[in-house]
View 1 (cartoon, one colour):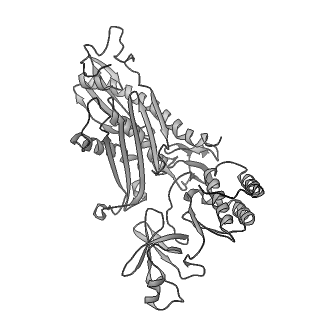
View 2 (cartoon, each protein chain N blue to C red):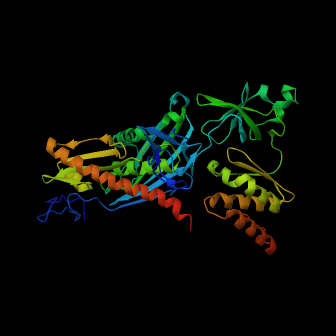
View 3 (cartoon, rainbow over the protein chains, first blue to last red):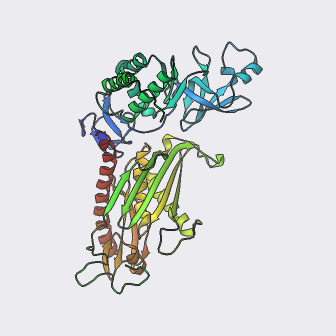
Length: 234
Length: 243
């Protein structure tokens, strides 16, 4: 059993990453006792499994994830929701909010084009994922700004034990919610604060792989505030 | 150089070809990854005077719905030559040749794509030839493999491709347009370098078994060379951002 490449190195698809009696982790596969990478990413050993953490990619729905999506259409059974993944999700009318019993009322509540925050209850590759909004905090989003980031960058935006996101919340005094599919919802006391947060989020996405990012971003936010230069239209 | 003029000799007395290359030399190759903003994955390839762009979209929902395959992703590929890519204006309508090459490229790439990971979805590959000078299908496969990797699609290997052939009785590597047209044979090959699998093999013209084997040895080495360039191009994209 030996690792061919060091941890935290960039690997490309088809690259030999480990040899021997390993169980391949995510984005890796085994052929004749050799583990190869399947995607462009950073190699790591997670639970003793050679794994590749992708640098780029799309969202793959998993049960239990909280996602933010847009209502695409209204059907007989409920709604079809675009969750920015290879599969669009279904929100069945039986999974609508508990507190609105009247069917007609719910139809008015959730319209085509609305953004909703929902939880995935079931997802496998053979059928479209099912959503529910029967939980506290889920449902149609009525206020705030949103921005989409690349799903593999979501862990970076949260940071180690939430260090990045807590810093952002503190510096901008905004409420920030990051969904698993990479939609970030920002609501703050003023439009400028929200813009500042969105600008910072976009920068974190672009510079996700650099070190010392948390400090740099917080400094930049403070500098921008000092200058009074809070125009982040771009 | 005017390509409308038929060259008298494809290989001169010194054993050099019309563009001054040795028999077993590749044309200069330039590979770039992530050139398009709107595509999920993209690549730009220059191989000699060939220039092309590849864009990859997906996995995404399959439309029309009847194309869905229940246990794996549909891979669709479109190879297109721009009207200004050739000596004489090419009719922009899809030709028989383009449709065939699209199919051949798709089949060359499919063995590497883990399409069973994303059933019922589609992976779209678009290849635009901006300038052509022989061997565009091989350059397209090389570029498409990079674009697929850039899009974050799981791949068993990065496919590399090149062609060999015969001109003036000699086996030559990486044919240019004139050598393809006036030579005796043209054999495009694509391989999965880690596995030593051949995923594309076509032959135009005639070769003896010995000649074929000699060419195959040559092409394996050449594809490995291209594979190294591909690896470098992919890694470079993510290291240059560090600065």
